[in-house]
Image 1 (cartoon, rainbow, N blue to C red):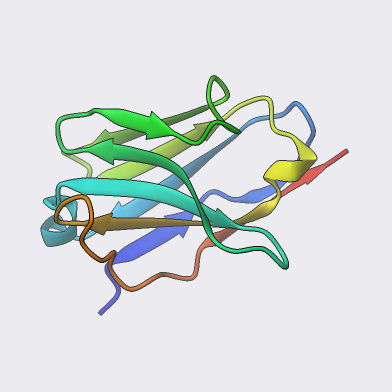
Image 2: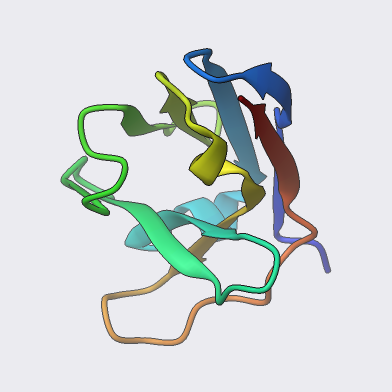
Length: 118
């Protein structure tokens, strides 16, 4: 059963912007913590940003002040607004959710490719 679907990736020039979307089932969206992750070629998957059910957020240092995570509870969609993109932001981006911090994340989806050209 597909629980999370990422979309919105693409090819953009350095300095440009993209907005990623993560669609989730109602049950999944009720989970306390949701996040965006990315995996670049040859590298491990890394955390980009987290958002709690109450709207609290945390960001990786590499994306602070450039990326903004948000969630629309009515639309059951989570977003990642990415501004001032850099070539090093190139990666497959994934969203995920879990009941609480420290608990295992759900099964990973296919992700969406973001490519930033210099």
